[in-house]
Length: 393
Image 1 (cartoon, rainbow, N blue to C red):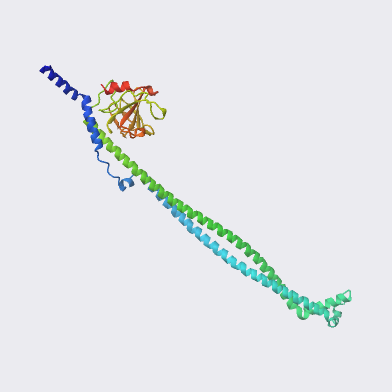
Image 2 (cartoon, rainbow, N blue to C red):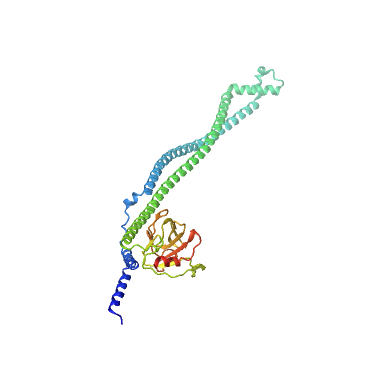
């Protein structure tokens, strides 16, 4: 049977346990989980916020520069269009001239052939009437023989009486035909050159049109992408700011973690863990840390004074933090739901640096902190004894 005095002692001990720092931290941890789970979502990001982002402004500057380049391209397009139109007009005119030259050359050749045929016929008639030509023999006494004299008389008679005009006309026709043939060659060569020039101008025009299209598309796509990235970044920054505010509120309402030899428990209370070092894991791996289970959003503390080496994400650990303490030891925090610290930040033991979660390959498992201890920043050792010393003090 218990004495009344002992009842008071037991009650006082129970009261002392309830009022101990660990118990106060447990209550604060439960309140923290309730606070995090009921936190209002961050306000939607407005277009004005996105437009005021430095990278979006830079993208707009690049778009304006692209617009200026486009104006230059449009001016070049106008010049190319004018060059093409002139080349095409020249080509068509030369085609018409070439056709006309073809007809002129054919006509001149026909006239020349007709004149030559008439001249030959008149020479033949002169030979068929030698009596008339003999009367002119005195004019050609120097001819060596009768046949030569008759021939010269016939020629002189024809030229003098009837053939002089036709011979001159035939000569003119021949010269005209030669001139037209030369012009035809020039026109034909010019038409070929004009066709090549027109094709070159057309190719230049097509290239400039494509350049303008590409320039506009690239600038618009870049601006759209930058705006999307800026919106995501601002939303993430606002979520992070909300987390930080919540963590600060939680830390302000919770009892400070117990300090043991300058170190504190890395995760807020209440938490549960066992010695699972070496336990099997997926892919044939073995466990190289301790899993400390706690409510989602429970604060994570800097275990000792030191520097945040990096805040990063990987496939297994999800959102993670590496902390190097003042003695050069490394502590690895994994599966975080939020990181409050940033790379290069100096921290003191007990500073809030993140929150419990289940990111990475812990998705679908109860929220917990995977915690590793690397003495001297070397290979990991079993952190369970250290976790017991710090978290069960």
